[in-house]
Length: 370
Image 1 (cartoon, rainbow, N blue to C red):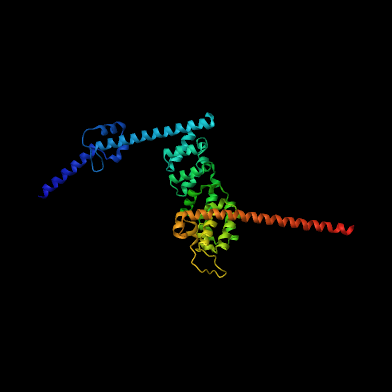
Image 2 (tube, rainbow, N blue to C red; image 1 turned 120 degrees about the horizontal axis):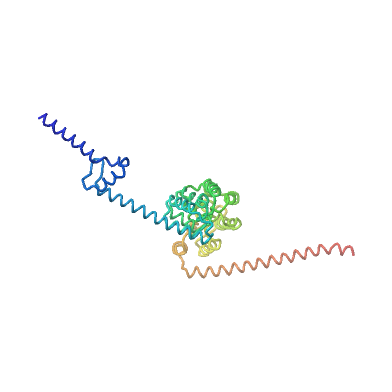
């Protein structure tokens, strides 16, 4: 019995060796000659081993790879031709550099953008066809490093195509400065998608806005971060307008800094703020707190007053109709005009009185001299 088992084992080993001599493992194919590879791929015999694949599978894989390569080459060729035509149209044939265009295409595709998005970029800023990659792709690289996906990158550049001409040494310090004020990766991404023009600002402009909120409005660092995150438009507004809006909410409505920071106050206009507040006030639904911060009614939260749609505001907060609110806004506008005219008239009267007083003072010495 032992002899029989030993004989069977020897036959199995012999058969295994023969199979390996017939077909080498696939992982060793790169060492074979071209003729051997051709014969192996076209051989009709069974070539499967424990480390290999069926002939048919190899052929299909080879055909698929070849097809993909040809397709990719065709698309790249089309895109390259489009870039060449655009460059010739906008900048003349002398500005075209085939190797430079290919380098731009490769760099953009490596960032995860597809050919359609590449054409969009070209439409937004044709200069990328003639600029060196390190210049034309600085913004793309910066946005990609922030973790923005290709779709959001295109949205940002559609809103602010000038960014494609920005330099790396201009963008990086500004991004780091925004991060310094608490805009982390997720927050910064949302801010840039909403207001990409921020990247056209200087660090000094951002610092001045932060200093204004700290000194004039006495916001804390965390509150300033919240304002920058929810209302990046403050970086473009005049300080006088921001201060007037803050003072109205703080003094006229009695709202503290913590609630103002969470309410997105600076996203709405002063006119809209006053319309909704005074409407509630005249309906008896809002009351300015006294010196102790006390009210006889419970005021609605500021965010419910200004950070909701007009439909929600009227239905849930004011419990009124659009018709009533529209009539009120017209009346309020007339009141504002009359108030401005009255103030202007009083200011003019004061100026006339000052002139008369000044004239009398000038005439006094002359009369005495006479």
